[in-house]
Amino acid sequence: MRAMKFARQAGTLVGVIHLPALPGAPRYRGDFEAIRASTARDAEALAAAGFDAVIVENFGDAPFFAGPVGPETVAAMAVLVDTARRASGLAMGVNVLRNDGQSALAVAVATGARFIRVNVLVAARVTDQGVVASDAARLLRFRAALGAQGVGLIADVGVKHSAPLGLGGSIEEEAIEAVERSLADAVVVTGARTGAEADTARVEAVRAAIGETPVWLGSGVRAETLGAWLAVADGVIVGSDLREGGRAGGPIDPARARRFTAMRG
Image (cartoon, rainbow, N blue to C red):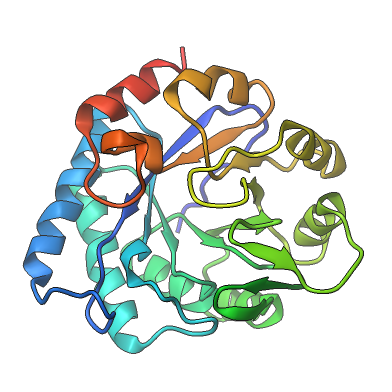
């Protein structure tokens, strides 16, 4: 599998497909074919708007598991990531919420996705799912066992909807650990919750701490702020601003997606 290139100041734009509830989740409505169709439409809209990559996540499956998801979720994600890849022709990413990196990697290998996102790759965080802890050792060994070193590993630091477990440890230290000891290819800085802007000082601190490893923004970037954020970060993962009213979930608005990419300049 050809590796995705991660570089400083690449201006990478990654659009998020927020999947509705999948089979097995409390809000699943029983029509998987409708989900496949909406996934294809969202992927096509992102490609037409000029995004560089797409990341697919099981956004509608809340409440999320703190640990591994069920096989029904893995199967559904594989089908839908493949659907998005075929519809868009773009590089694909996978995020299995809340923190199932091994399932995300399995989906990536099965579908030809180029990277996965792991929300807690270092240490542990207190979340609405309880304590979510790193399992980087198993994840990296699983990647080696699958011969999937070409699948990039994108790691959140100070991830949204969470707080650090215990005292001590800065976001810069977490980023260094993610890169040097957990082998992240890029790190993601977010705001406190979905749709919330990151703190510029935190982004700059992480960027200074990790050398040439790219720093991406993972929440709160809007079309009107994209230029300013790309001056301090190497890429943006955007979901909320591509949707009607700037709210997470629901289908992508093609006009909003085009407006967003037009601001890259």
